[in-house]
Image (cartoon, rainbow, N blue to C red; front, side, top):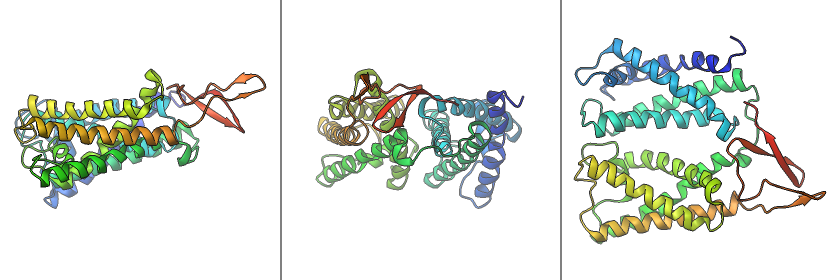
Length: 327
């Protein structure tokens, strides 16, 4: 069993349950949320009242599989700073649950208020950090590995936030002049709310969306290279923003999120395009700036347009070669 790392990953993930339940139980006692973690997960199999026992089964089933996926994600973005990466994945999983069973499912018990969303997001963050720490300590045993400055997936996530202020500034100006009824942050907050939009929740929403958009743009270069990346990033961003309105506005029947005019649609599209151009430019400048070089007649295949998902570049002076990543 000591050498069966996937099984050990499952066992270590069991420690997330008490953290999630303990934290949310305290927050419920303080009247900051209406559901604990166990009660929340009971809605996986019931639309009635929350059930503690059913929630235990639901939570441990989902959490075990989710953190097993997190364990294998190390093959994609490495094991360096793994607690941060599992925290990000855990918060994403928590968001997907509330989006699916709360907002899209029109379940007012599961759908949280602004503060409730922050409570459950922070609970997922704490559990993700803890499980990621255990994985790094007992399964990978390389601790933090490389410097944050050379961890390109994390840098891509940070660069993904660059589009948010640009889109927010443009839509805020358009709202002031009556050309739009929602800013970018307000529209993204409606992914989690059944009521009025919230700038405060929009901050949390844009942090998550920006990070995922950064990763999508970064790894998309495996398919279509990093040439003219600003244009490609703009296409990805405007597509994702459109999907938010289509899924949570039109299909989710949320009249607050549906845009009323062509002009408003164009304003949000322009904000996404400008944000995408900025993200693509920054990635091309800081993440894909290396060119193909040679050493001793060998071609350096770790070039700006050849990023392999399951390999990483091992820096060796001015020459970088492929090395299989150990997990």
